[in-house]
Image (cartoon, rainbow, N blue to C red):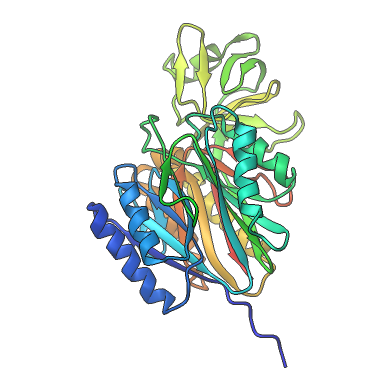
Length: 394
């Protein structure tokens, strides 16, 4: 007799009701109908910045008393229930008898990222009975360099451990983002300057891919002076001088990120987007650090190429999936992609959904930085202007 299939259930609820209490009730009632009596063990919540987040968390946790939950504020939200939405909230709840799912939180990222990340992982791992296989994380990228967060997680989990997720966002205000956390010890925490993690262990299968689609605009240059998240010089000149001929002297914006090549003889790159510039020093600042040295090139986004890349990335993630029963798709896309795609942003979701022949539930959000390996089985990186597709199941 064949072994019974491993149960791994993921149910999604999505509300665009502007009233926080009404939205919470909608999420809860829809989730309860789908669970049909199964116990929700863990969850992920994404919500626009203007919701009363503590109200959302309190009502969700009261409705699901065994729940551990992480999440954060979002630029926009995605789900198979409502597609692409702005000013909404979306919840996924997980249930499994065989797969372990536990959460952890680290505070005061800006003071000590290594300690905060180590605390979050230790808190989660203390609940596991077997080695963890996958980490999903959300963190504040306005108070701490996203690379410092990732480096801290990798210091504990290992350089090649699969870490995926995103930097929480606030609809391009760049003022304050929120991280959500709930477990038996810490109730309904809505924080800033924090990192939250969800660890999976047991018979889990997953696959992931990144998608970019950005086109080189400029000649290549060499980084010659950098200080963490601030890039001061390219080719021995102020960074803004490198941009000047291509933008007619205008200040660089997120629509013109820098492609940073992984090696001088390699055409693969990750992206860094400028969130502000300083005309006095000629520098620009991002939400994740730049390498001390490296080759860079200004890039720009063509809508057709961005959408085509999103489609191809999901195709690759599907092809890489080795399990028999995929359960959910998580999408982490960049707020910059939403800005560039404009009225065509919904197409990024629709090209993924059009390939979703198994009708898997989909959930995601638009971030200030995406965390995933650039290539399969490589160390995770912090990306900008990128779409990450993650498929989880058994």
